[in-house]
Length: 207
Image 1: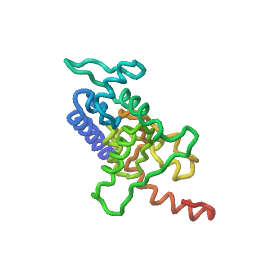
Image 2: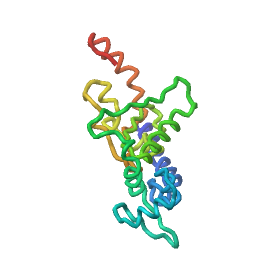
Image 3: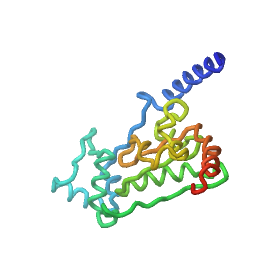
Image 4: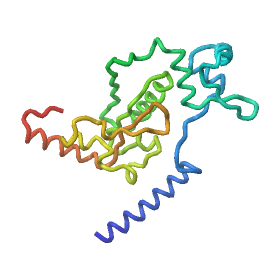
């Protein structure tokens, strides 16, 4: 056990070093800013409409960086919601679930799921990304290390084991505005045993 603990400490140190190298200088991700052309593209309108609407002063004005004006992700999403209001889900409507799944590895499941989440948020929607892959690749893409920063209560495992009735306990915000995350970690491999065990002990259990 002492040898295992020593190896685990070494691995944790290596992961911290890798994270610092991957995500300099603060070891955290940040959402991009948008130029006026990119803002117009996100709103799906001509740039002249952005310039005209900006004069009204009812939407975020952004900040000057050098000789050009830029908008943060949150400000951009506010603009998008204003221009695409008729396309957004009514407040009392039921949310839509999109599942990205395949038995084969390496077929862009994670890339598709993360791209959908970020893309839908750029269309003004609020998104919850639920990572159910024990590899935690989507979790990693949002700047969270599954091996060192995700505990069991941050994953769907308590739901699978019957200790929780929904996933609200595990939802966390991300660096990307309007995209929340339920993390994954290698401990989710235990679901392969937990779910059949529940089915065998509870005849009425359905998954």
